[in-house]
Amino acid sequence: MNREAGFSVVETLIAMLLFTISLTALLHYQRVLTAGFYQQWQQREAWRVAARRLQGEESKSWQTTLQLLPGAEGCQIWQVTASRPALKAVTLSQLRCER
Image (cartoon, rainbow, N blue to C red; front, side, top):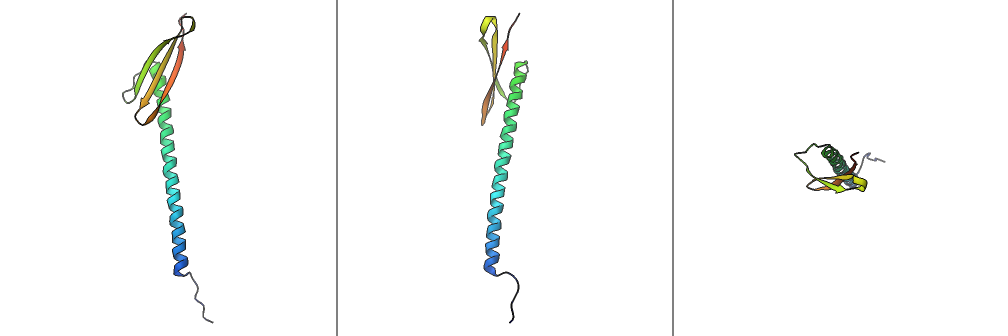
């Protein structure tokens, strides 16, 4: 009895198909992770920009607005909003009292 060792063409094609599907799924997952990390980095940067704006620093690449709102007992609430296109705006508030 003469038996050939190895894989048939059908088995090889099925293995290649499974490999391609797995690789495509992993590449998509990596792209989604990268986008999430980038968005998280941008959000952290927005918080830093807002905090610096409360200290008086302006940012050229971010749009910031500073509002002075009345607070309790002669205090003021300083409220900064930092935003950039395609990014959720962040708002940071600070209570300042002169005594």
